Image 1 (cartoon, rainbow, N blue to C red):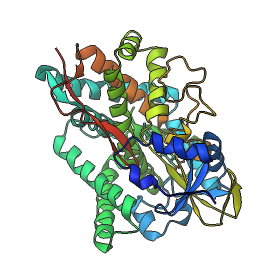
Image 2 (image 1 turned 30 degrees about the vertical axis):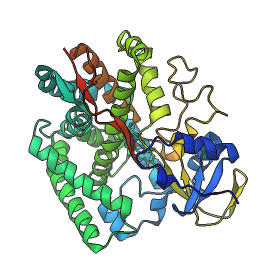
Image 3 (image 1 turned 135 degrees about the vertical axis):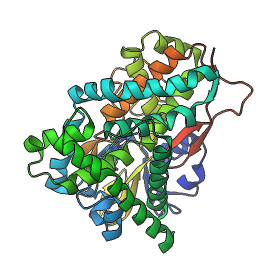
Image 4 (image 1 turned 180 degrees about the vertical axis):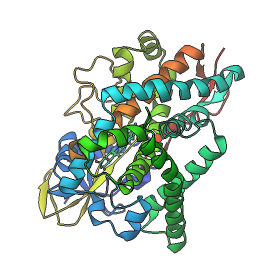
Length: 403
Ligand code: HEM
């Protein structure tokens, strides 16, 4: 059995790719004693696990009542299984169709970005992780839900509620009852916050996300209920916030660390240079480091025997730099043949439904920073960015100056 003496846990707040490369050279799948699960590190093994839910189930297939309550109810897309999940997945994907994304860009992402940049411009310097990356995805959702995207106190409150839920989700096996109670209370409060907006958009559907969810339901999810709406909005809000925050941060860091890259992207902010840059950021510095699944039966994977009910962590960040799949895997290459061929947004039946929105936020946000903050560069006299985090990772702080 391939066992690693080092653990994925030891890579917290580090660039983990040396660790991944060393392990992958010895084989694609290894037992990690501290994580109490298998690490799949190659593109092929990760894709196999993520594409075959009959062999490797999503962990929330085993969700208990507390988990379901914290996730906003049994109709949460990540909790649903089989045919019910497929139907919900198709429905939500359609809410992020190219036509709908165009509406969201014009009515929500562009105005939110402009609001943030207008606040930054007079200052000449900023810490962009807090002042931009942490703001744009959450405020975009507020706007998409018909809330006031400029309400700072409301934003702070919602972010704190999400943080409690993330803290619980990350450590629910070790933390006690007190954190569980706080997570349940945060979940109830988020539901209560959303309900009036959900009802208002049902009665007067507009160009916002809830309006599209109601308007498209009769064709795609017949008999849609308020419970569907609460659970869906909750998951979109949560799944689309932190992930995009860190993706934006990595994109800004890479742009500001390589002048050739900056010039190429700045010269083509609406074209393929920007589009391919975003894909390469996601491939080489994707914000979600890993996902996990549970084996439904004893099964061979990458030369190892996985036992029924053992956990397999698909290390998507390692798969995305697998030299057996990508030439010069660590290089950000704006001319890769198939730029979207990566696992940063997952693959298979649970591929990310919000990738179109995330890409639109990144494209709009980066183009605006380049255009509106001339001379944008890292501040050489301020604390430099470090790659930080575990499940989601990014470069921060992002102290910048501009003219
Ligand atoms: C750069 C940003 C993003 C990244 C890296 C990302 C990554 C992922 C990954 C890896 C998964 C698979 C989770 C699993 O099944 O184990 C996923 C699923 C999902 N994502 Fe994203 N995501 C991003 C942005 C978004 C946004 C903006 C939204 C909402 C608009 C969103 C909503 C979802 C939802 C609802 C699922 C669950 C799909 C399902 O279970 O069928 N994500 N995402």
